[in-house]
Image (cartoon, rainbow, N blue to C red):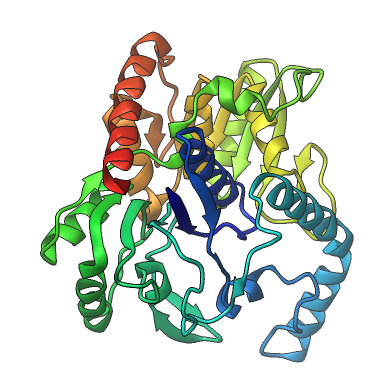
Length: 364
């Protein structure tokens, strides 16, 4: 079967790229021909430009932003190069037709199109205006003869206008199966008249052994370390990370989602997706303010805590609740008992099998 995937495969974000890799890899391992539908509109592309337009409402802030962008340019270029290398090597999109507008009709012929994971159903703003939901991620331009399903679709913070909700109700008619990543989106889908099932994020469809094939065997860092993966800024998480490293007599490494104006000691600012996994795999303890920091902590059987996601917490809470370890998400961090991975992996294995089966049944 020839399958097309619509997802955020070009985002400069570890989770976005790794979930795209995981879904394609899982389906290829089942014998399918799988490729990404290379849709990347200007509203997405503008977030990841190396040379940024001058920003700021006043001359002072324009100068401040220009200086900051100039001082981070080389490090941003290094990170962009690493991310592009991963995409080109592991996602196989170099030969594909590119689409930059949701007015484009998809030219390739597919037996099935999967609207992939990540927050592909969230509402958007572009150049300060509310754009709403993107019809392309609802298969609006896919021929009616092609089967359309969603797998682990996500919306992040659910804040739909009445118009967005009505459009979503219309667009979902094209889907033969709706599989989502969190309980809040399942509830929304059901409220507007459809059936949905919660499944695992694609990264959790692959085993630790499968992910390890991408990662060098040597240790990421010679000394023992606690890793703080800071996707969303959190003073509480940073304070806890410093204390945890001291308690465990470990070095503290901080992996940033942003590149600070000046380099900071023990900060990892331009890791590749593989280095991101490598750092998690070899850490003594993980503090994360991200869903995929949580997911890969589970994959590599690490002790961890996820902190401070606030309104973005539902996808983490859904996953941890399924595994019976909901206490490992906290808004105000406290010390926790270690996770018993014999028990947790048994539950995860069962949920993984169900999610895989839901996906395979849906594409048939």
